[in-house]
Image 1 (cartoon, rainbow, N blue to C red):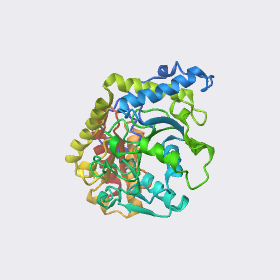
Image 2: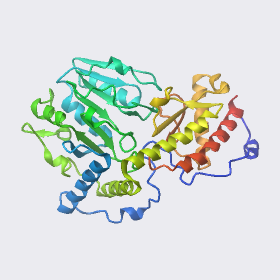
Image 3: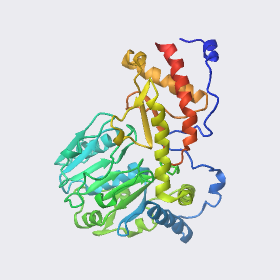
Length: 394
């Protein structure tokens, strides 16, 4: 083990990120954010009051505008973050048709487990792939309902575009877009249900999800009752009709008006910087910084093998140095965690470790609220930390 004195002799980079928050959720606040942004929150007021309903509806309308949601889609606020939104639609929709589910990282694997082992869908197929890869989209039967994550938050792999999904299809496409919405161009004409949360690309606070429904999804909800009893928190219809209030600001349970104010602040910032094209460009610029560094690195690589499938938000790196690969599996985990702890101790990268189920390495958030200059400043610190850990473990 390297001594404290040896640690002191290692030359540290001269520049530090202005914002060291690289967590993949909750994510960095937008540049310039302060508590003053929440000063107008309707604290102590009912969300059912006209002012509360108006704020909730404003989140919906501004989100629609920034994302370019089609006019005939419904958009509502639901409880329990993206997880709540996904579970709501799975419990409400799965079972009417055979279902294919893509499982290639932790959260998409959770949806597969729910469909097979909790909902007991009678005709379910799970198409799998290892971390860093996508399942073979050519094997999907688009006559089935299809459940997929657009962006693998824990694997750094994304679906490149909507080309494999036919516009004219029999099944519904249910898309978990929690790390994609506001950072990637979603093909609305090839999707039917899209979910996300406030805590990702716009850096909002947690606990609330967004649920977008196409006309085809609404028709299914109204014409085909779910083949199971639903708890109140999952119900999207009443007496065979969509509960329209959900999509106008009447949330199913009590929302945090503090979080609502923060979501509005993030949306106003998104509009001010140039809307969706600017948000996508900011995230792509962050990926480019890391890609330039990886191209010159002798110890790190992208977990995503195919450049076209690399996420610009959840940027996952794996350690490929010979000294690291020579370690046993448990020691690799300890070595990777040691790199993360050194970065955190220096205050240059917080929450930068890979997800617990993923291969040991690093995960850096590159969503639109992250500044490219902060990632640029971080890259030499990654080399510094790896050099120290190599000396300790090799």
